Image (cartoon, rainbow, N blue to C red; front, side, top):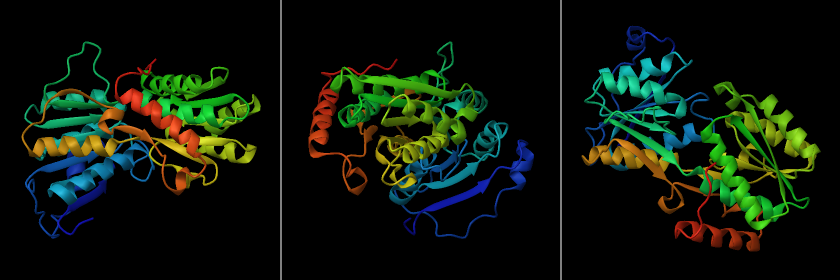
Length: 344
């Protein structure tokens, strides 16, 4: 982090805003930020798993860290200890007059809407935002969404070109439309290069806990590998570590999600689908600083550098040049609009 940046982190221990205020650290005596947007204050509230999840929480952190370093914005972070703290954490930032409050994860969607209506002068952003059923998105909310199906299509093609048994697997976390996009894109990518392949799929549950149940993830992966799958892709948060363990123990290969997860299981993870939450967050912070923030939905895909996959460097050594070239050609077709990837 550059000397001119300022990031402060503290944990939420209760859902009461008054109690939250008592947890605030004393004003920092760090170097005052310098940059084009040094007066912009950004508050980031993490999702379950928090910072260090090697997934989209970390990606969001990288986005605000970059904004602090390059733009000089002031950033503070909150890590709720439970679901009841999400709304309170965002209210705290809004009540303190922050210019932008960011919630990480679709689970924040309802909370963001509630708090945004209570603080109409504050700008809010939500990663993986799910619009309300009536479509009435508050005008001060920017819903950051991703075309996950496009990145998943690419790793599906990697799986289809890598499998030796014509059987591959998909393990999802919570059984919801957002995760269905990962499966749909992955399945399409597999079948685009291996029409005879069979895609086995399963979900860990129907509540947010499905994103942090590695025991269930391992059990689902064991079942799929036993049915012949030799390459498995997960979109399941920390549940995916169980998928990695099963793949390692049973000689299969695995594909990570959201960020480069090679270090989770070196030698087993052959690539990862990258969802650039850092890009979405940075661009949103920059828009606030430049006075061009707009509410509504914004989608990031391959053409926006919003999704992709690990294709270069030592963490992609298991991918042959031929596979890399074929997947690159498919990516180019998607970017040009010649290939439409299904999202369900």
